[in-house]
Image (tube, rainbow, N blue to C red; front, side, top):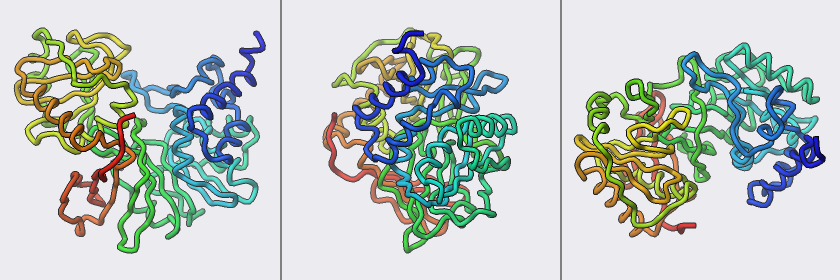
Length: 397
């Protein structure tokens, strides 16, 4: 092994990359990344994979779906920035995974702080516990239980963080969070997840003005929420959509069997500009007679002539698919209705100054207190109603 491929060298290179991109703005978070080797939490994974800025699947379901992974380091850094950990904090994590996030947090809160991490999967509990002990973080408490119930024996918490996508904020988390605490979680909105940083408000709502688009494995168990994913027949194409039960998959598959026309959006956008700009805007502003969805191609196998993962707008008799890496390319099927609706949304985004995701605001209300939405959308959840909107401002970058 060359010096450039040693664990230390690869570890340092990853940290320097994150720092250069501005992902490590908090010195305590940077120190934690430097102190905790990621490869110790990914036994058997090649070092170059362990130290790439990518999520690493660690367990799959019988159908090949990822049910546990080690999150992308840059996303972990973003979540830790949202969490604003301090020495001595009492922290609860939902979703232990490999134990890597818990180790980073234990390093930041120090010997006077407490980290408890919960995991529903017994196999992952054993893996996280073994990894934490090997890396010297055996004082982290790994609990085998349904994280939706929180962990009352160590409450109340200064910080609660979920590393799984949630449909709603379980009441136990709110009850176990200190009034001045912060709750960070990837929250399903409308085919997209936003990693929110909720703070309790005097009116008993939860409010976040620091929101990061993301994609996490869903919380499992009774609180996981409705099914939002559907594979089209035996093809490689999978749709993720809040209204998946209202999409006729057979009709859509028939529609997609016609050759696609290739169109382009008025601007050629990068994947970052889609995720941080146009997609959140489209999510909050698409026409009521269309469906907004994210799509994936399993194993990168083309389907219906479409290549690359991306997002889609689906109307009753037409559809258009936009790959993230397509630089503005749009695959348009059947009529032009969906494509025209997409163009209208793009024009509205441009008229609004290319508002970006950092202008998004999320507020959760008790279900009987939700206000009328003058802008944005209201999403109904079992325990709360969710209001999501964008403030003016921002710019395309």
